[in-house]
Length: 317
Image (tube, rainbow, N blue to C red):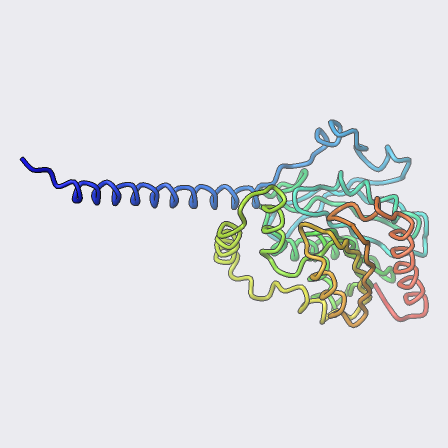
C-alpha cells in the first residue's frame, strides 16, 4: 500500500496548529481571569502585615492623639478609620485615600508630612483593602461614591475639607472633588500624588513592572470591568480636573512606571487651579524620599492657602 506522505504531513501540521491555537486560547483565558481576580482582590495589608513590616500599628505609636471610627458605605459595607488630631486647629480636615493594594496602615507613613498643617487627618481603608468588609475592589469607580459617603460623615460646619490621594486614591479624590462642587460640603482643595488619566493605565504599568505582557490582558480586563461596572466612558481624569472649582496640587515623578508622568501633566494643566510639582527621577511612591523638603513645602503651601481662603470666606466646608 502506497503511503501519501504529503497528506500525512498536512494532517500533522494542522493538528499541531490546532493544538497551539487551543493552548494559546487557554493561556489567554487563564491569564485574563487571573488578572481580573487580582485586580479585584488585592492582597490585604492589615495589622499583621504592618507588624511584619515593622510599621506602626496605629497613630498612637507615632505619639499622636486619635480616635477609631467605622464608616458606612451606601451599599451596606463598612470600613474602619482613624481620626487623627492635627497640630494646626485652624487647618483643614484632610481625608487620605491610599492606592491599590495598600491600606490605612501604609498611609501612616505619609501622615507626618501633613500633620503640622491640618486640624484633623482621616485615614480609612478603601473597599476590599485592609480591614474593609467589602470583598471586591472596583478600581476607582464605586470608590468615588464611598469617598463621598466618608465626606458626609466627617464634615463639620465651617471646616474646609481637603482630599489627599495617591495613585488610585488620587483619581478617586479628583472625581469626588469634581462632583462635590455644590451641596452641603464642597471640597476646598485636592492634593494628589501619582495620578493616572485612564482606567487601563495602571494595569499596563503593573504588568510591565512585573515583566509580564500587557497586551491583550490589560485590555481584556478593562473591557470586562467596563461591562461589569456599566461603562468607563467617563473615567478620564483630565475631564474631571477641568470641572474642579478648588485648588489642585499634583505631585508626580518623571520616572513613574505605573502612572505616566504625562498624565500628571495633563491633569494639572486641565484644572483651573492646577499646580504641578515635578520630582526628577521620582517613581510611583517614593517622591517624599526623593526630596522630602520639597514635598513638604509644596503640601504646606497648598494647605496654607486653603486655610487663608477659608478665613476670608472664600471657601466653606
